[in-house]
Length: 298
Ligand SMILES: C[S@@+](CC[C@H](N)C(=O)[O-])C[C@H]1O[C@@H](n2cnc3c(N)ncnc32)[C@H](O)[C@@H]1O
Image (cartoon, rainbow, N blue to C red; front, side, top):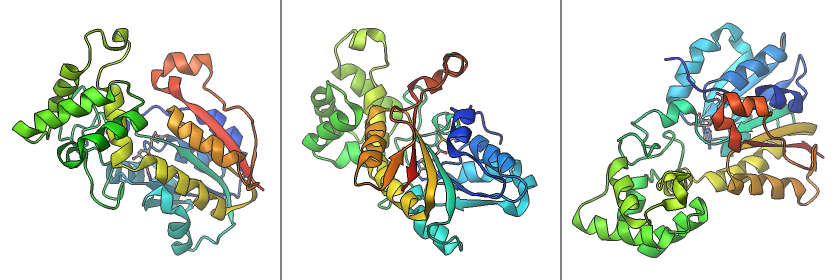
C-alpha cells in the first residue's frame, strides 16, 4: 500500500544535511519514505542510505518504492535509539556517517491505522506501539490505563501531555477500570470527555488530544529513545557530520536543544530552530507544529 504521509520540511532538511554525491546517510524515521528517497536522489550516483523504522508496514511499503535504488538503500527494522549498534553490525564503521535525519513521531499512515490505536477519532485497540521494536517490554496503552497506580497515570498525563486536567482524568480512568478493563480507544475517549469541564480549552483541541499524546510517548518511550538516538548519532557521525531533527512538540524540541548545547560535543548550525515556510504550513497543516534543529559533530 502506498503512503499518504506528506513529508515535512523536505527541502530544508536536505539543505541542512548538505548532501554529497558519495555520502553515507541515515534516515532514522523512514515512514512514507519521502526523506529517504530524497537522500538517495541527492546522493547519487554513489551515496548510501540506511533507513530505520520500527513499523514493519512502513518498511514493506518502502521496499517497492525504493527498489530502483538497489544496493544503495538498506532498510533496517530497528529502533533508532540503537542505530549505532545496528549500523556497526551492518558493517558501517563508527565515525563514518555524513548525515543523519530524525523526523520524529508518527506518520499519517500510522495515525490512520486503527490497529495501532493512536487516533482518538477512530475506534481501535488501545495499543499505540508503533511496531514490535517500539519498546522492549511490550507495554501497551491498555496496560498503562488498566494497571498503573492512579498517581503514576496522573504524572504521565501531566508530564507527557502537558494536560492541566491530569488529576481528574487519572481519577476517572481508575474509577472506570473498576467496572471493566479499558481496551478500546473510544472507551478511553468517553472517559476523558466525562472528566474534563464542558468547553475544554474553548473547543480549540479535542479533550483527548493531550492524554493520547502522553500515552503514545509513554508506550514508545519516545523521550528516552530520542536521548539515546542523539548519543548514538554522535558516535556514528564523522567529525563535521550533521544531524537534523524535526520535532512536533515542545518536550522533544527541548531534548534536542539541550543536547546540542551541552558538553562541547555538538556545534549548533543554527541557534534558533527552523520552522516550515508559511506556504508549507498552509498546504500541510501537520507541519504547523514542526521545528527543525541542526547540529554538527565537533
Ligand atoms: C513522521 S514519520 C517519518 C516520515 C518520513 N520522514 C517521510 O518522509 O515519510 C516517523 C516515523 O518514525 C517511526 N519511528 C518512530 N519512533 C521510532 C523509533 N524509536 N525508531 C525507529 N522508528 C521510529 C514511525 O514508525 C514513523 O514511521
